[in-house]
Length: 190
View 1 (tube, helix red, strand yellow):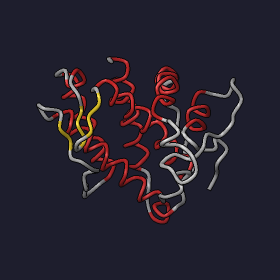
View 2 (cartoon, rainbow, N blue to C red):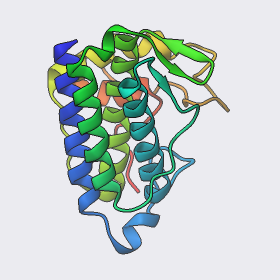
View 3 (cartoon, helix red, strand yellow):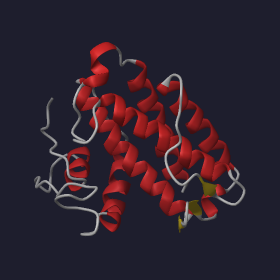
View 4 (cartoon, rainbow, N blue to C red):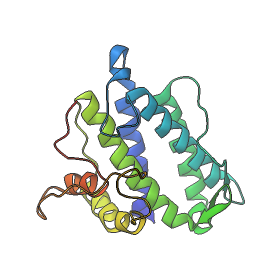
């Protein structure tokens, strides 16, 4: 869990830095996450990171049922969520379930899901903005081991939350394999 915690912190830090540099028309650029432009995807990322952090910080592990509406600077909101999450995890919050509405999952499992989600959404935003995105290789490998457990046929395919997997060579870089398994084409461009 310590590694997952440090990988999540690093990804959220990188995500905040990426959001610091967005301005003007870039907010309206398309992303590989086809339902969202940059602004909508940034709001999704900020809202859920704030929700997850609130859930881990709650003594009973109860998060709001959906993404939190966050006003103000998106990068600052991600930094604030990362701080709250770090403090909660330092206090042992990953050792208890995280509840989102009526659904709950083990805290460590939820942390792995958060890592995977923000590695992929960070990539979505970075490629949409023409910026680099290079999460730690060990964190990517951990997400490659985790993601297939979440990407069941109920959630992945045409008309589902995740697009179908994109074929890539077995020896493709870890980030390419992760975004491909998550239904994105690693060669996507705006």
